[in-house]
Image (cartoon, rainbow, N blue to C red):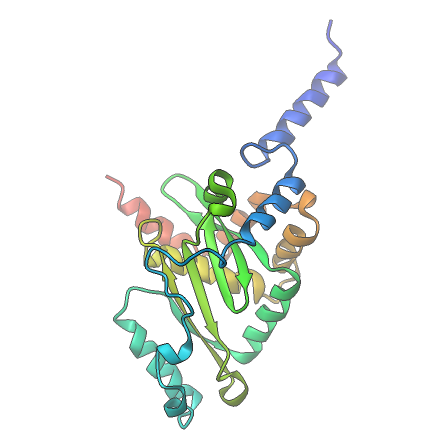
Length: 240
């Protein structure tokens, strides 16, 4: 008769294995591998409609807006992008500083994007003030050749004088639509700008203690925040 304790141990190991990403039995090693691969994000040659060296001055005249108030600049930024199919924001100085300081010690993270069936994970990697995202499956299959599918551009040029940081984005529309890109962008604020210790703790765990990281915690946090609910609802309505 087989040993019940040994059988239980095998079950535990199988259960642990099922929690790991495809093709890897050790999560910590996998996350380190992901981080190494995502270092290449932002260093790839620009393709699929992404702008090389997308500067603030390429969007509008910085000298001209310096004479305006933060509120006026915010309105100009919002009006400029309102008619465009993209993601944009005006981030208060204090919030950006918090995000930026945390990004220095924890430059990589995982976001969960609601899909019709379940969720798809996207990995984010800070490269200077740019935040590059690509699907986890893209990294698993393409490794260092995985290209960015979404880039968030942050412009701190007016931060000291006006107390705001401007943000806009570019995405590969063959992989993401604007609502999906917005959901990912919102998760940057959710995880990096939070006052809730447990929420930012997931970012720290991913970067500093990868063996302890639980993928489902990201989904649980997203669902608790309600950020993905609207997108999930829209996808369900689109089901044929």
